[in-house]
Length: 279
Image 1 (cartoon, rainbow, N blue to C red):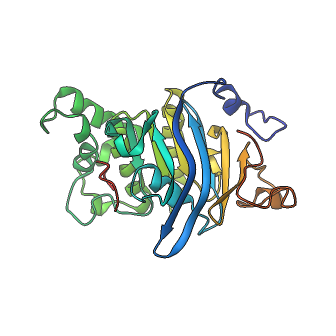
Image 2: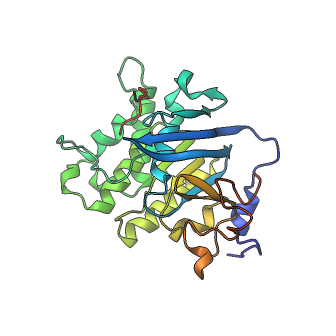
């Protein structure tokens, strides 16, 4: 695939949102603490409709806290978050948001089949909790997208780590979300599952889904990334094209100009709430 001089792939460049396109996620001056430790120190972040944005950074940089604050799992001590132009404190349309948490088991210790777990992701769209024909079709399609049709009746306890992750992604996709938030979807996933997950995400992006994801490294998802936002110590130190995959500038958290940008500023312009999301 051709690569732009800026480091942005040609595929991603074709999806770059037009100026003035509606923001799906807006984070302004976000500050958060875990215990007594400041984790987010005033970050700004905007994700536009149809955009794929990767949060990069070293362990402890605040990446996971940032996405968890977007869905209301981590309350802010200062700042504001809006989803689909609605302040987070008033946002209720969680069927528009799919969330894939970090390092968890699909059934959370409760015996369940792949189909049952994926079907639970459809609850936000069912009427009175009763699935209809369309709901069942959406579940089967989500299972097929992640390549687990032949395991649909199996207990999730019998799956590998990579297959567990595919179940979680299928659960998030079952509701047909407009915004997909994923926290390190490739962590601990075998190469075969990585390829399947990359293909699944590519199909969602082609359909117009907006994606915000935490990554330790870009890996097979690199061609899909429009923008990377690099965090260090709870601050944004880069917001722009993904780092080139070579040399020290590719290391998450590297600040290419610490003299002119030493603080929490990007290099390029540009009690927990009840969310209804399964975690």
